[in-house]
Amino acid sequence: MDDLPDLTSPRILKEFLKSKGHRPRRSRGQNFLIDGNIAHKIVDAARLRREDPAVEVGPGAGALTAILARREVRLVAVELDRNLADALGGLLSSFRHVTVLQQDALGMDWRGLQRRHFGAAGSAVLISNLPYNISTPFLHSLYKQNFPFQRAILMLQKEVALRLTAEPGGDYGALSVFSRFYTEPQILFFVSRSAFWPRPEVDSAVVALQPRTLPLSCGEEAVFRRAVEAAFQQRRKMVSNSLRSLAGGSRDQLISFLRGAEIDPRARAETLTVEQFAKLARIAYNYTNKCT
Image: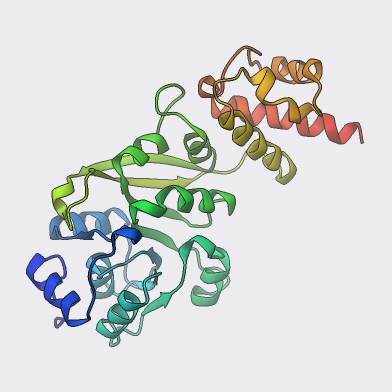
C-alpha cells in the first residue's frame, strides 16, 4: 500500500501519464489536482471510515482515489476516459476494495450501481473533482434521481458552486432551486486554479450536499420539476405567462394557483423561493387530479 506514487506531485503525475501515453484532454475537462493538501482536505470532508461505501466520479489520475484506497474505503470509481480508467485500474489492482469502472457517469443508474456493489442497504458517499464540462448536467442528473447518495462532497467550478447555493436573485436559477429542494448545499472552501495541471482559467469550490426529506408526493414532484424548468426557460417573463401550462393554458386558473401559493402573478422566476415553487406544484397537481 505504500508503493502508490504521489499523484499530486506535478513531476510524478506527468511521468505517470507519459508512461501511459496519455495527455490531458481539454475536451473532457481534464485538469488534474496537484495540491496534496487540498486532496486530503476533500477526502477528510467526506468523513469516510474504513469499509464505508463511496463512489468517485471522474477520478482522473487518482489524486483522491489513492487516498481513499489507502484508507480502505469500499470504493467504486467511475471514469469515462478508457486510457485513464485502465491506468488507474492497473495502479490500484492490489486494492481489492477498489473497483474502477470505465463508464459515462451522465447515464448511470446510481441506485442500481450501489445495490450491485454495496448490497441492498448500501448508501454511498459521493466524492468527486468533477470535470468542468459535465458539472451542471451531472448535478441535474442526480436531482432527477432524487439525489441517490447519503451525501456528496464535490469540487466544482466556482461559478457553478455559487449558482448551486444561491438564494433568490443574482445567480439564482433552476439549478439553485433543485439543489435546495433535494439537498442542503454548503460551500466548504474555495480552491485556486493554481492547484491544477493543466491550469484552468477559473477557480473552484468544494461543496457539501446533504439530502433533504422531500415535502412533495411523487406526482407533485413531477409538477414541481415542470414548473421550475418552465419558469427559468422564460425567466424574463412574469410567471403568470411562463407557467400557463400548469393550468392547461388558462391564465385565470393559473393566477388562482399563484395566489393560493402566495405568489405575485407579476413575479419572475428568480424571485420565487423553493417553498413557493413547491406549494404551487402541490396546488396545481391536486386541482388537476380532482378535476379528472
